[in-house]
Amino acid sequence: MRNEVLVVTSQNLVELWVAATRPFDENGLGLTVEPAIWEVEQVKRFWVLLPDVPLFDEWEQLVRTHRVSGKNGHDARLVAAMHMHGIESILTFNAKDFARYSDITVFDPATVA
Image (cartoon, rainbow, N blue to C red):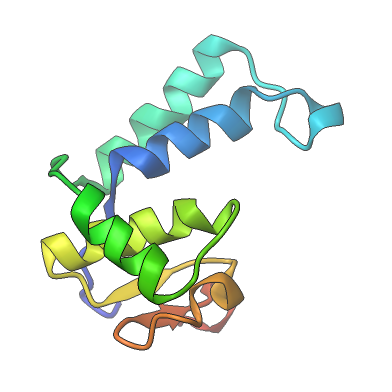
């Protein structure tokens, strides 16, 4: 309804795959390979897959500037991809993980109409 173009990166799809195929008792969805393939294909069908571009320099600058450590390094890589592709906003259930990046707008799916 907002006429937004929804995009994903290869990192998003890798993280989807990992979570989808990880066992339930390890906080995953417990899918086998075939259903996981289907899920990834559905995302690629309805969302624009951004091309991979060199991100390391931008990522390194972000983690140094924002003092990022641990698993939040994955989020910094998404922000690096956003910067490289000129994307200004992100839709995420983990808004607090992106609060440190004042140059992007963070939307929680529960608040988007």
